[in-house]
Structures are given as structure tokens and as C-alpha cells.
Image (cartoon, rainbow, N blue to C red):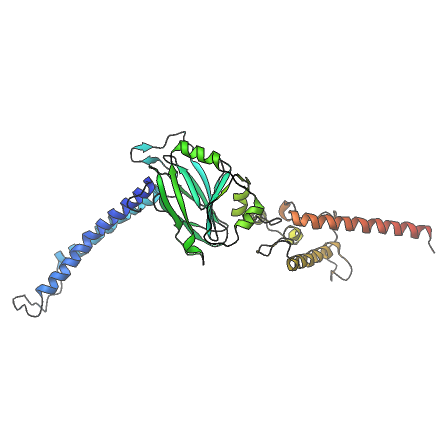
Length: 379
């Protein structure tokens, strides 16, 4: 399918492969031919061949030897430069095929792609549906892929459509392409990613626009929310085609930011903290209850460690005698949870902070009661 594709991008890439090969053969074929010729002409049994042991230089021969490869390299460089920019996977398409430009008001079909262990998830934001190991797209319409991964790096590749592009966790790559004929084509991962890698294959169906609209309206099944995604993301092999009739609108962004799990801080929030100057000790409330590993936020060991960190911060802020050795930190003006760089507290910490505030309120009320009792009974 590389040299006989169904998409213009893949066709141009295939043409570049053919042209590059022909240009290199201009050098390779003469070199092979001359190698055979010299071996035959200057064989030991050929006494008629001229023998010149003192020959050392020929300007004409040097020009041929160096000029021809140099010209080929210049041609290959120009071809690669132009092709790399024109076929940039992030670049929107200018045409469907050589004779069909993309209409100025044409809207591309958006498809969010997630490489899982070991299957492919396709989310259609506009249609509000999703599929696993099946991609259906309309023929003659530009497709704008946003691609990421849940765990390890993979490579998204549909040879009939366009070149491969990596799918990486915590990052988003893009790919633009369009089919110029209908049919069913193979898609797969071109980057080894573990035991189930050989089964990371899916069928890509290029259909008419009317058939695509009919298919999208007919997709039914369970809802793909964050809980369902966490279960889907667990490693599995030979996964059959799955349809989801409804998708959480923020799921893909949560996947990219690696914060699908409840109470987990998103990478975008972390980067915003860094941009504003960093988290600081006061912002530990934002992250102490969060677990960035697969153990989950409710893991007892994780919670125990987080509670220790929270206790340390509380002692630091409250300046309790014996718990802050140098008494250099004063209690904050407000006992509300402190946050780094102006960010609010995530869900898990909110619950912990609310419990802390209730405890502090109870302690304050108890202290007032004790003080009132002492004032009435000074003895």
C-alpha cells in the first residue's frame, strides 16, 4: 500500500521514495557496472590491458567522481526540503488529490487517537462517539488526527493514508490526511510496545460521506467516561471492536494531561505552577494526596505518606512548640488550605482540607469553652 495508496499524502510520499531511488540509481548502477568491467578488463590473464604503475591523478576522472554525486545530493536535498515542508503531518491539507483542492470552507473531521496497551481508541469529538480497534472515516474529507498514548510510546500508521507518527504519553502529535477512494485498509502500530504489540492492528474503513453519517448515528453502546476508560486502559490483547455511544467531553484532554484518575493533578496545572514561579512548601496541599502511579489515590500506603506530609506542613504553618525547631515560621492569617501559585485544591485534598478545617474549628471552640470556664473559676 505504500506505493499504491488511497490517500494523496501517502501518494506523494511514495513518489518521493521512487524519485529518490531513481536519483541514487544514477550513481549506483554505473558504479556496479564499472566494478564488474574493471574486474574483467584487468584480470591477471588479460596481458593486453595497459599497466601503468606510476599513474596517480586524472583531473577529468576526479571531476566525474565528485561532480556527479554532488549533483545527486543537491537534488535529494532539495527534494527532501520541499517534501518535508509540504508533507508536514501538522500542516493542513491543500488538496484531496492532484485535481481536487480542499474547499475553503471545508471542515476537517476531528479524530482523537489514543494508543493503549494493546489496542487503539478512536474518539470522534464532533459526533460524541468512540470506537476501539476500528476507524471509520468519510472518503474525500480531510481528517485531523490528534494522537497520544496512555502508557508507552507507540507509532500510529495507516500506510494507505499517510506516514507514521509517534504516539507518546503526556504529549500530543498531529496528522492530517484524506482518502481519495473508498475501501478497507490496514492500520497498526509501527513501534514495539510490549507483549501485545503484534495485535495492535485495526481496520480503517473509507466510506462515502452519507454512509459515514449513517454509521456515526448508528453507533450505540456504553458510555466512555473516566471510570470506563481506566478499565479499558488496563493491558489486554486481541481486543475485539468496541463501540461507545457517548464519550466524556473532557476525556481526551485528561488523557493527554495524565489526570484521568480522580484527584490527580493535570500536567497543564503543574506547568502553570512552574510558569508562575513554582509550587512552594505552601502548595503541598495541591499534590500531597495525589498518586501519579497506577496504585491509585486510595492506596493505603500512598494515603499514609500523604498524611505524613500534610502533618508536616500543618506543623510548619501552625508553628507548634517543639515541632518547628527554630520558631521561624509564623501561623498564616487564614487557616484555609494554602495553594501554590493561586491554584485551587484538587478533589482529594479538598476532602482532607475540609476535615482539617472541621477539626480546627472544633479545637477552637473547645479552647473558647475552656477559656470561658477558666475565667469563671480563676482559682
